[in-house]
Amino acid sequence: MARGKVQLKRIENPVHRQVTFCKRRAGLLKKAKELSVLCDAEIALFIFSAHGKLTELATKGTMQGLIERYMKFTRGALPEAPPQPLLLDAKEESNVLKQEIQKLQKSIRYLFGVGNKTSTMDELEVLEKNLETWIYHIRSMKTNIMLQEIEALKDKEGTLTEANKYLHAKIVENSAIHNFVQFATDASYPLIIQDGSFQLY
Image 1 (spheres, rainbow, N blue to C red):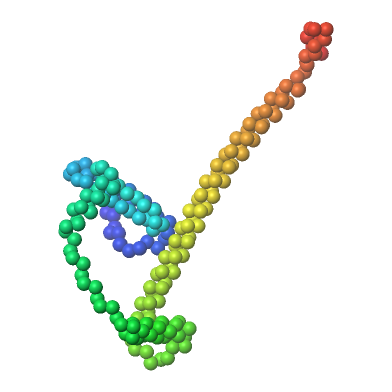
Image 2 (image 1 turned 90 degrees about the horizontal axis):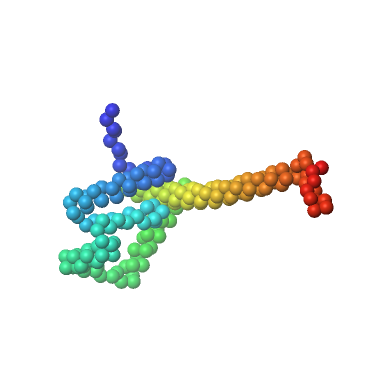
């Protein structure tokens, strides 16, 4: 059966997203190594996960050496920096900030259901886009917190597992010592030294 086309959009389920990230990252690293071997290419690769963890690959030499080579190569090829726009004077900047404040206040009034009914379609579309952006950021923060909690629980599980193994080993060790002592004290014919010789009773 042919595999269906994968829709390229953000995976909402954090567990599925993490599994996909690990699989795709491994595939990308493998392809980079194959390209380096087959074509004698020097490849440097950086990958930052959603949690900020770094994965890097330097197929030949060191990463520092490849970065220095890249900087040396691009130093002469970089285009000139575009001229900086003239800074707004204080009055214009103040006007821009006032307009932004008015837009935010209007959006807040709509959020609480007290906005006037004379808004245009463009204003409502802007408000809708702002709401979608805020929801996206809130969901991203929520997902990051959930993943951090999952990682913390995994670490705690590992610690508790190791502690359980240690305690189990101690119980086995103490049980073996107890059985040995009981065996030594429960002998049917204890040995007693009398007059310098051993006698059984």
